[in-house]
Image (cartoon, rainbow, N blue to C red; front, side):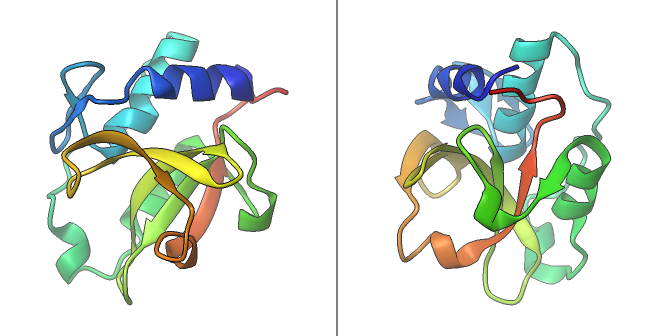
Length: 143
């Protein structure tokens, strides 16, 4: 899959309602569901990723659960090297990385965010940029 294909597909999810553990374009998804859904559409492969995670786990856990799960399926890259189509993992305060989105330009990313209630585009601004903890890449990305 190419970076352009990733971004193009991700944009077709805009407006999809946020729902914990969901992964169905046009119906509902959470941040992990968006990442998973884009991958499934572009590859036709369903990853064997457990979807049993409480919505509140980052509030009382320090384990890097999202990061560790991503390492099982994605390739970690340096945050400074992240390009369009790469995945950004965000953390808040001292807690673990608990949110993920897709970089769609040098200054924006797409994500399913509970506070907004749907998949939307956000700026990589002074709020989001300092919260980037890790960057990942789908397997076999080209272009």
